[in-house]
Structures are given as structure tokens and as C-alpha cells.
Length: 146
Image (tube, rainbow, N blue to C red; front, side, top):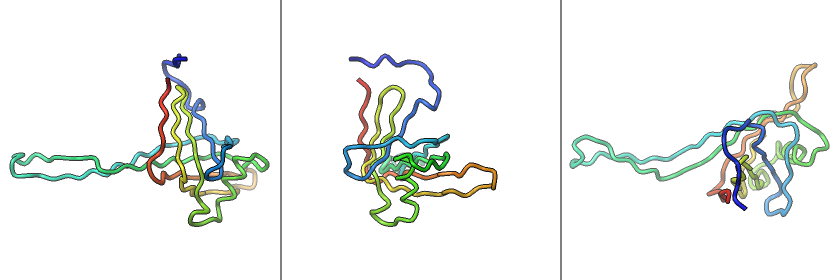
């Protein structure tokens, strides 16, 4: 069935899921409020004599980082999973992460590095935050809408 999505959309239509590496079940993460994406490219530059001073370039690498922020929600499987990674290191701080776009495109990160940057601290009248970064760890799998 062809995808009938077109036009602009609100950012809340993006969805994220996370789970234990290799798990068949990924969980949404409750109470996340904002995210930002950074695409890092590695570009080689060189200026050969025959280019008359003009640079040549070739993209040779890529990385992706997603910064997510929201509220700590104790009892939500996805939120609890992320919070539980705060004190982990090495391979224990990796997880599968899925980004689902409104047009049904899916970007799946196997073994993404999850870097928890804020957990439970705020003003006395504030709601406890949960903030983290998802750092690509190798090439993600991209499934385009049909």
C-alpha cells in the first residue's frame, strides 16, 4: 500500500523506541518533549595543481547524534530503560534505537551509544528531567516508506 503522507507536520509525529540490543521488542519513551539531530560528516579536501586553485572534496564519513530531553517517568518501560543506562559504561551503555518519521521512514540504530546527560535533578518545584544523547555506532538501517 503506498504511503499517502504529504505536507508539513508537527514534530510530535516523530516517534522513538529503545530496547535491549538484539531484543525483538522496542519500547516508546514516555514524556519526552524535544529532540535535536546533528549529522556529522567527514569531508576530505585537496587542491591539485590541475584544479587551478579550486578545492576538490569527497565525503568520506558520517555520524548521527540525537539529543532527547523530557521528564523522568518512573514505571514507563522505555523511560526506565534509558534512566538505567546512566551509570553504565562500555557495551552496557549501548541499545537498539529506532526513529520513526511521520511518512513511515524508519531509521534503526543497532548498538547505539546512549549517553544520559541529565537524570532527576532540578529546582525543588520542577519535574525531574531525563535527557540523553543517542550516538550512532556504525551505519544505521534506513527503511524508506513505500
